[in-house]
Image (cartoon, rainbow, N blue to C red; front, side, top):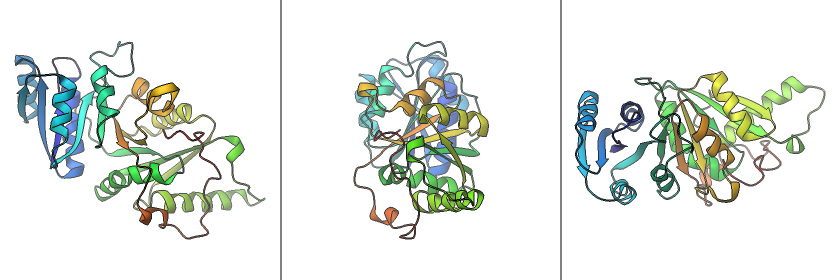
Length: 276
């Protein structure tokens, strides 16, 4: 298996290569650096320093990267969010085109991400829907097998809060255990962070408090009309790489059956029907 590190001659190249190596270790894969355009000494030097093979290909960046990512042995693609920390958009046009079209995980790396930071913990926001959980099932399993710390974030709107009796502490704990069992069955030791309010605001706050090294999101690959507020916020403000995985509308039946039939689940999708 391979992880493709899409690098250019900008400040994000080193962080992209470092992130690619960390993600490749989860997939038991190797890293291949891919540069689209003319050969650049700085790009070659960055790949050499990282100890990875560099392939330089002429053509349109999106087309070349999409073609490379389509290979069966490619597990994921890693790309810089934008060239500089002061960029005006959450992500550049190439990154946006890839995250909204590829059917494989794409890790988007902020230009000011810490270089050589190992991935020891991952934040997994789950909206309480099977498609979102199914999209992240493989990533959670890989993280669990690698003995990474997994923090699950779930944000509900106040109107969708489950009813609790006077035994609040016990029932919240039981509800949390059932939520993990249903939507994150391969990570039974995961910590669950519950919040009430707007998901895009609270997920970023949970990330900062937990200091996780990676954010993994399942999403519908739709940025139109103000959708995907959590993804937009993460791309704009996350200090760590954001791993985006396409969510299918037809999740594996095994996931839906992972928890007991009487397991409690959110009454409504806390994102108002919009994944991530």
